[in-house]
Image (cartoon, rainbow, N blue to C red; front, side, top):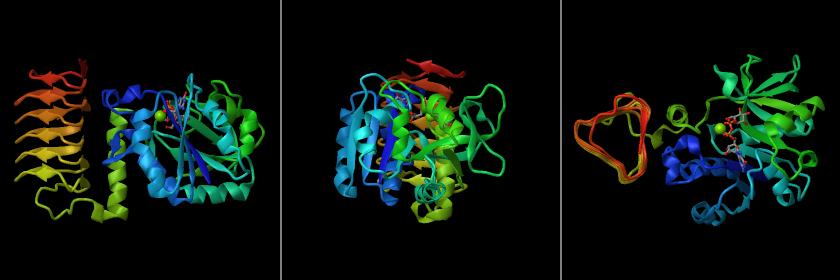
Length: 363
Ligand code: GDD
Ligand code: MG
């Protein structure tokens, strides 16, 4: 089987992390975001993966090429000269996606869930129409694409991208499977799959929806990245709890803590719930970590409090310092001792030695 991942632009909403690393390579639960998707696709039997990007992908090529051999797959980088939107990239990859008449998956790169690829494929084959959209329910649908089905049917009646008025709360989870005939609807030009292609397919009664079970999150911005991490860890706790730190560890507080084996945890720490700690991280004694992400090579010094925060690679957080309020520290940021930081987005290589009490960008 084949798949295309819409990797897209510069990940501006995930700055400052994406100033250093392309969004798909930012680690989510200690693994590059896109690798979660690639592994799930491989598990479902996908052999041909196209990554649709609109910038020079050298860094990604270097990181991802080794997985071709490891997984026995082909990864092709399909590079746009101008951004082609969410449908145009399918036309650009026509040679691969349309090389036979088997269906292919399309994924937004920034969504996390228990990817139900096999169940989706079976459902898609059973209805025989052109496309299937994975759907989930959310409380605040206005920032997504909303799906309205025909009565007592999985057939989509209407697809409304970013509705201004409430039309429903079942939304597009950003994962699709299509017959190659969809390629006849898409020209090689900037095109929105949500605004142009889906409404036309729904009008032709060619589009169905498949409900996702379990968690889902678009992790394209820091607040949601943290929420997505919590949801993902809860799912790991249910399915593969041995991957998490044992709740009997004296420092684990409230469960759902993922710690890389090379990380060092000081005495008397209190960590959890909902914390991920990356490779070579050092946590000083008595530190308190809750609902946060600590990336590779970071150091959290004694008695610091890190909460609702993403600490980027190679950062140091001083003693008795407190971070909160969806702060994000870019690569190699240094926060002095005894400082309070609330809601700061800190650009790479900066030092902070005074309090930041209101959300702002530190540059
Ligand atoms: N290659 C390529 N080229 N990819 C693109 C382009 C482009 O020009 N524009 C966007 N993308 C990629 C993004 O990187 C992302 O992975 C995906 O397409 C969706 O774009 P977002 O910018 O993240 O869209 P969104 O989150 O506002 O809305 C989309 O996702 C929601 C689910 O998270 C829509 O598909 C909604 O309908 C959906 O509900
Ligand atoms: Mg998104």
